[in-house]
Length: 228
Image 1 (tube, rainbow, N blue to C red):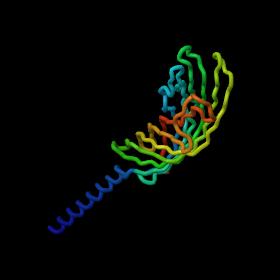
Image 2: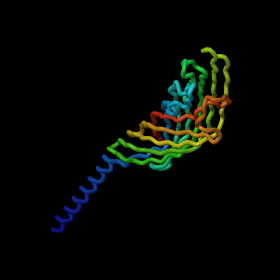
Image 3: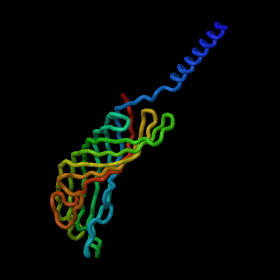
Image 4: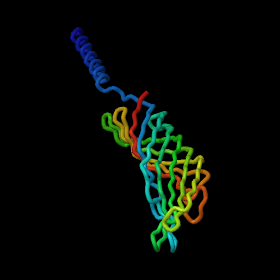
């Protein structure tokens, strides 16, 4: 009887051990890959509304271009990370024209780039096997480099052209949603950039070196790869 009991106990331990081993083999713990790199496209999503309207004239954003960005980051934990990136936001154009005739009085082109260092906070709200969906908030500091070219019109033709530059530091804040599958990810986000030396709104009433330079607010779509 004792031999039978010992045999059954040994068989039970063997089965339990085999089951635990099989579970460990078929359901491994998820691997955390803290480092990542990525690239994407962005679009100026700032003040597209009429900026200045008077009884005789109107000033507005006329045309925007697609820009691009590259970045790399490190996730200290699944919730917190840091990121360093470079953004080229293309060329954006504003115009001012008279109400009566519709003739151009001013035309301004602004192009530039910025570099940023941000902290990111993630909240996971959906996970199905290897697919993860997160929302995130981000914020940090940036260095902004802008160049403007302004044409003044007289009688419908360019009379004078001015150039201006803006190099300054600033702060940014943003949010978005991120989808991950294994080591690949994609994210859609929005970031509002502000400088410490120049306000976001201006007008066409007088010319200065920074006339009508609008600090960019960007909507972006990125692809990412995690490793490490």
